[in-house]
Length: 238
Image (tube, rainbow, N blue to C red; front, side):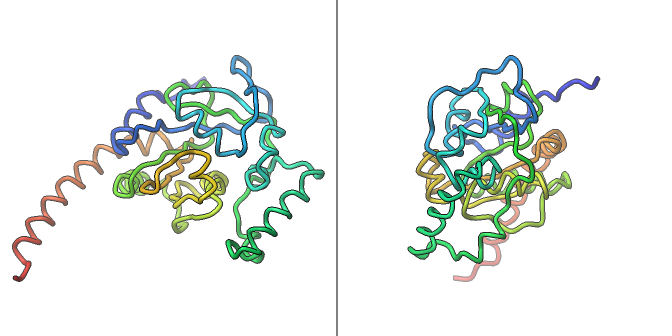
């Protein structure tokens, strides 16, 4: 059996390029409850609230019912029961009424095809299961470089910058490869991510090859920065 990648080293690489105090969050969608990982106890208002807890250092798993407080997250994660579907329609109705979304946009929102038995969350460097995706955030210029590393590794999707809802970046990345997201107001409220930060979501199977390209991209950006600064000074007119 092949050994698991060194996720602690990969986290350090990602942190090195993003320079963010928030740890990359590993998320694993499982078809059975994991052994040796604590079940989440309590209640959170949204699915992305679990990102905040994991980024702060906690590792745990949730079950579908833990996501029922968030109809939108329940939709993208495919965790809503039939009894909860009216709540989704109510939230979408409100968002449509205030001009936040058009109802015809909804079919284009990415969502999981299968309902998971459990979802594990934790800091990437401490995860004990294979991550399905990794969520990371940082300032745009830093997210740019991590995206360039994914592109160099052949692991970047061709999708444009995603927007609302932020959580659809997870199924989008699973299906297409790494994606960037501008986030949404709900996510920023529940996770405390700054207005000056963006998200990048990486597919778990691509982590090693992306991490292997980070140093090359960092050096290339440093070299090109000096090149463009000198060029600007040389060619700029008074």
